[in-house]
Length: 96
Image (tube, rainbow, N blue to C red; front, side, top):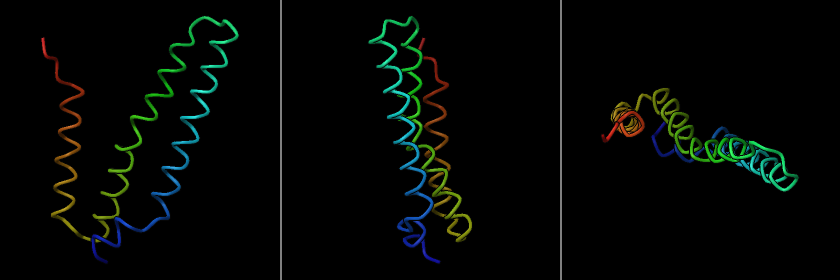
C-alpha cells in the first residue's frame, strides 16, 4: 500500500473530521446558548469547543501516522512524529 493510498483513503479520516466538526459545533452552540441565557461560566464551554477544533488537525495527523505505520512507510512516519514533537514542544515551551 502506498503512502498516497493511506493519505487519500476517506473512511476513517472522513469519520474523524466529521465527528470532530459536529462535536465542535455542538459544544460551541451550547456555550452560546448558555451565554445568551445568562448562565455564568460559559467561557469554559466555549473554550472547550475551540479546544476540540484545534485538536482536530493533531488527531488527523495521529490517524494518518497509524495508517502510514501499517503501510510500513517509515520515512513518512518519521516526518509525522517529528511534526508531533514540534507541536508538543510548542505547547510545553515557556517563553519566560
